[in-house]
Every structure is written in C-alpha cells, then in structure tokens.
Amino acid sequence: MSPLRNLVIKVMDKMKEGKGPVISKTVAGTLFVVFISISYNVMEIQKRSLEGGVLNPTDEVLMANRILEASLMGFALFLALVAYRLHYCIKELYPTTRRTSETAEEMKLKPDLKHHDLKEHPKRATASR
Image (cartoon, rainbow, N blue to C red; front, side, top):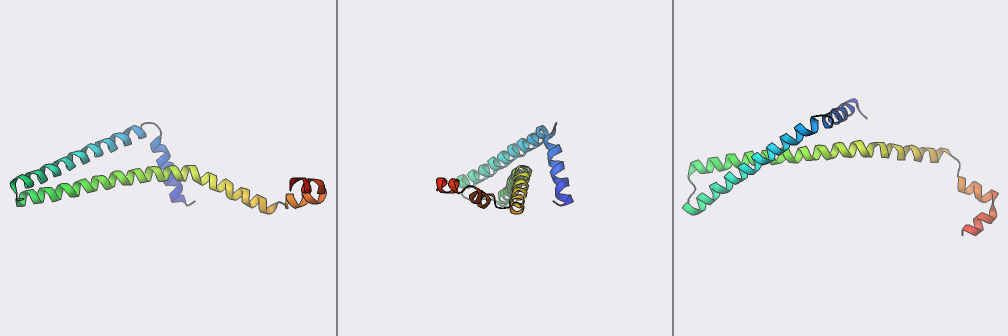
C-alpha cells in the first residue's frame, strides 16, 4: 500500500473513533434536511408555474439555483456514502486478500501433499475414490 493510502485509512479510522461518528452523522443529517428543503422549494416553484401557466424570469432563476443546490447536496451525500463504504471494504477486505495470497504462496512452496500421501498409502487412494 502507498503511504498516501495508509494515511487516508488512518484518518478515516480516527474519524470513526470518539466524536467523529457523531459529528459526521450530524453533518450528513443537516445536509439531508437542507436537501429536502431545497427540493420542497423547487416543487413549490413548479406548482406556482402550473397554477399561473407561465413561469416568470425570477422564478426561473430561483428554480435553476435551487436545482443546482439540490444536486450539489445530493452528490455530496452520495460521495460521503461511497467514501464510507469504500473505507469499510478496504479495511476489511485488504487483510483477507493479503492472507489469501500468503496462503497461496505457501501452498506453492510446499510439496504436493496429496501426491505424497498416495505413494505412501495406496489403500487410502483407492478407498477415497
């Protein structure tokens, strides 16, 4: 693993200890509430345009601004979720794959035990078939 990758994993581990999870959940909750509020404002502007028939320029600018804000919030929440899950996968799967590769290397270095057992015990070989 590269030094940068190790640093990022250590920072993510430290963030998940202590007050880190509380702070990150609070920030994520706040972003989600703001995202819902912005989406509600966009729906209100659309409802006004449907009732009046024509969308005035001010509402068009407001709606475009709100849609951009909502997409930014949604992307930020999505990327936070992806980073969280990616950290989990790296932390949990990397040691497993390392152990698997070490075991595979050990098996390559050891002599073929099945072939060796068949030579010593021919009765076992016929009994297992």
